[in-house]
Image (cartoon, rainbow, N blue to C red; front, side, top):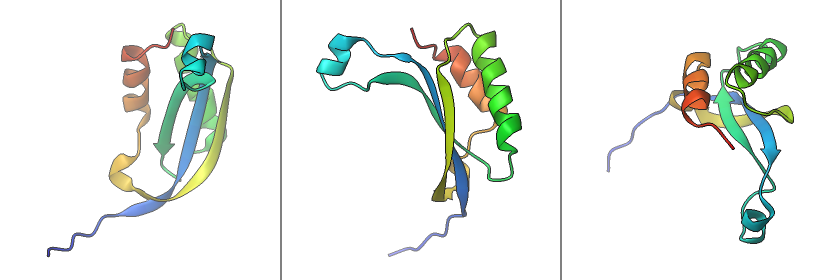
Length: 96
């Protein structure tokens, strides 16, 4: 068996809540709200990053209910999102 090492970090988990979900979808097991989730570098300034996300969401004409953050342990560094990737993803994956 081959062992591989991956680089991990304690990433900042960002949960962006955009809007309430449709009641029919909720009754079928869907989430109560719709939005985005990202793991970002622990080196990011959280307040600056929240300002970036707020501006990005509004730029792409999406609703915004709130942004929450917490720390997630042992996230692969390769799974971290950059600002450029996040903006591109939001632009291509709008929630309506």
